[in-house]
Image 1 (spheres, rainbow, N blue to C red):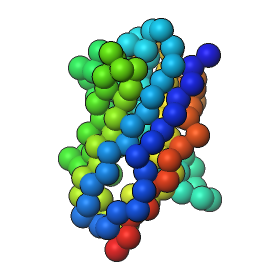
Image 2 (cartoon, helix red, strand yellow; image 1 turned 180 degrees about the horizontal axis):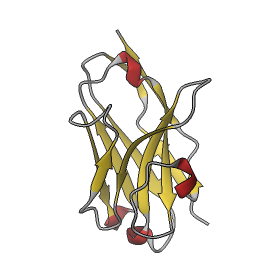
Image 3 (cartoon, rainbow, N blue to C red; image 1 turned 60 degrees about the horizontal axis):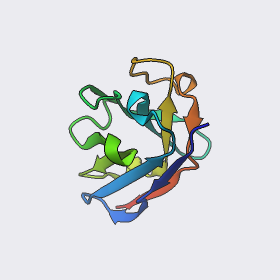
Length: 125
């Protein structure tokens, strides 16, 4: 069982920055592919970014490429999402997810085994 707890959400003006954190339990965190997703009420959960267990490889949705950066610290069992140049359309609940199935960086929610409860990011115009 893996527990994930997100933090760092809040209210920010357009053009601003936020850094989300996700703390994970588990002794083999460095073997997990980690992902960030987001969801707006009434819409499907949307892929944001994913990172390999080693942190060497990452993958981004086109909508955030160049503005968001995913990173991890395996010594702290944590993954981060640095969000810059935020836009009102980035407003959503952001979820951290872990995949224990291998090394593929997937954009599909079904590829992830564990999820956090989410943290709300609101970007005002």
